[in-house]
Length: 209
Image 1 (cartoon, helix red, strand yellow):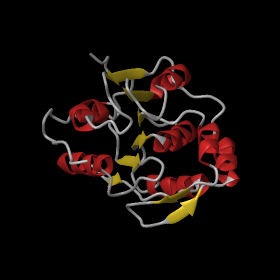
Image 2 (cartoon, rainbow, N blue to C red; image 1 turned 30 degrees about the vertical axis):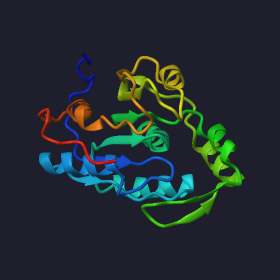
Image 3 (cartoon, rainbow, N blue to C red; image 1 turned 120 degrees about the vertical axis):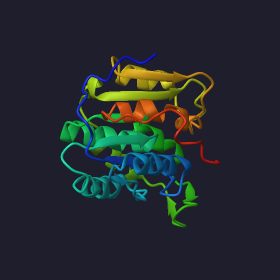
Image 4 (cartoon, one colour; image 1 turned 135 degrees about the horizontal axis):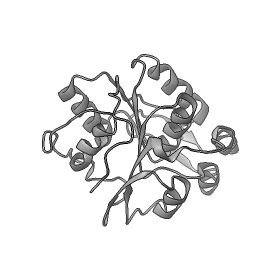
């Protein structure tokens, strides 16, 4: 059972940032948009660049259109970018299997070519990706602003890394949960409660993967 959010201030909107090589059309993006529509909340789920600096610039521009106190939600690499924004702007945030130390993470993909199924973009991971991530990494985080949603069986990232970095944050662990966190629909009430909004259980159904 989760404790009550530390800050009951109602979010003025929601910004969702997808993970590496994901996009606007992903199941989690669609779930967030559907939940925001049910609550009549302004919402932005932008298609982000594969380059971290460009992605953060776009996210920050979208943030400016969501009122004075938006809730940030991010998955995987999007969780890292959300952390950058939350610390910079003093905002509440929900992190879904967030990438921890992503500058080190991308070194295993150097030289690898990718195609984004949502945007159709082709790109190759280069050293500059890691350099930008290293430059963006916050020196410290404030755990009390975060809600963590972690899958215990994440096949891509080690949940222990997120536990260590965000030690003291409100945390929901999904037993057997994967990196894609396919049970997100079940946890949307907790996500929106972190932003001071009540979403009834079962209002939003799971999207096909």
